[in-house]
Length: 68
Image (cartoon, rainbow, N blue to C red; front, side):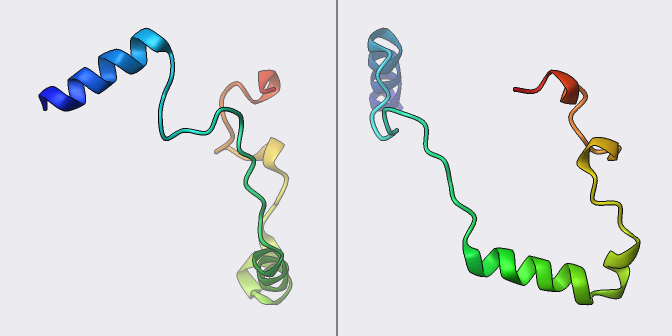
């Protein structure tokens, strides 16, 4: 525990976080997964009645309009 706290304090003081990349990492959605999802949208009977418009979803973030 002492070692973890020591490392945490050093990282906070230096604003350097070992183990994390220096910039943003943008994950890419695999093509096979996209094909699989699109096929499911077309063939699954329950999917035909789903409104895929995220802006109309009750589950969207509350600050959706202000999202960057």
